[in-house]
Image 1 (cartoon, rainbow, N blue to C red):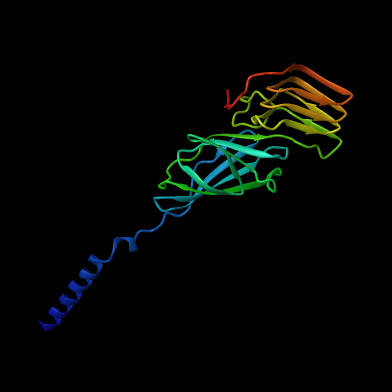
Image 2: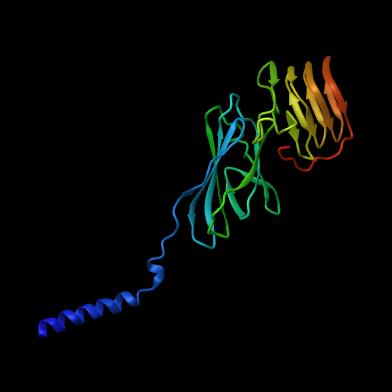
Length: 239
């Protein structure tokens, strides 16, 4: 009888201890969580939550070059319902409402074919259950490293044929500039500032449209259609 009472006493003590252990001892931080991959034309984007503690989170965006050409001087536009408060490997250059534009830091401006770029960031609030939406990848060739620079058909957004410009610059303070002795552009161009070309030969098989001026220095310049003093295009999405 004494042995039964001893066992009962130990059981009650253990029950008492576990009853009064603070609940936060058992509260585990959420670990890495992956979301569905975004597949664009010539690129893919993965979003992962690395850690989530409710009031905030750490995440990363992985930009993958699945095209046939190097991605140069990239920036990435997307909608995200959470607030990005800090980022590394990229700068937040525009933020309005839920729309973000992040841009490379210079040292990571180019992504080779088949390679990936990871952009880490922290944000709030936590309990992340959805991925960024409406990804648009922009990249502009600023400088030709060879004697000839060939800019082919558009390959920059999430739809195969939903983007109307081969080259697009949304900056209202900086011109879209190309430095190359021999440049061929197959498609249309838009710049919210000026368009400048420094070289010997320029061929644009389409419309070159600028809010400012078209400044081309070279003995052989052929542009199918020139439009200056055009309207600003503050944003663009797949048609």
